[in-house]
Amino acid sequence: MSDALTPIPAATLVLFRERAEGSPQLLMVERSATMRFAGGAAVFPGGRVDPGDVAFAAVLEGERDDMAARVAAVRETIEEAGVAIGVDLADPRAAQDALYAGTSLGEVLDGARFDPSALVPFARWLPHRGVSHRIFDTRFYLARWPDGAPEPAVDGNENVRLFWASARAVLAQADAGRTRIIFPTRRNLERLAQFNSFADAVADARAHPIETITPWLEDRAGVPHLCIPEGLGYPVTAQVAASALRG
Image: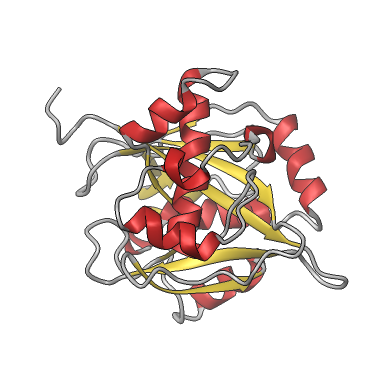
């Protein structure tokens, strides 16, 4: 298999901030329009699993690839939003700067205890090989916004802005043309829109198997649809292909 077709391990973090009233908010970042993958789209913080993540995860208890993905999700969220999940950092913004300067995650954490259980497995997505971009084998995790954490700060490199919004609000913005989202983000937002709390989301995640989701094209009454499997917690499992390919 060529390098272009080899799936790249990746991880993303769905960060919940609960409010006294209304639906929980999720942290979204808008990628720079110049980015090759999902340029200009609103996504959850995340990115590829680096060799340093694999090395750091080697000392953690648990399945190796899962632990490496959890480490990557935490590192990427620090890099992209200045938010540390599952680890106590005195100054997450300084850690954000240090990571961008090339400091390893191990050095940034400097002996701080890392708690992988702060991340709850939610889903795993792997695009079909006909897509025009690199193929990411992405694990999605849920986490709760830490009490007293500083407000997130956009990195200004891969991402141009970040914002908090409920899943329903992001979907409404996308439908109105004010925000662009890609197909996996839409399906996950639709699933997340069902939950009134972080606890509800965790319960749903634990009630469904984590199976790799690879969308496929299917002809339905002469109309091509982009589909995902039933039974994995998603309320919408098919979308007209032309619409899906636009976002």
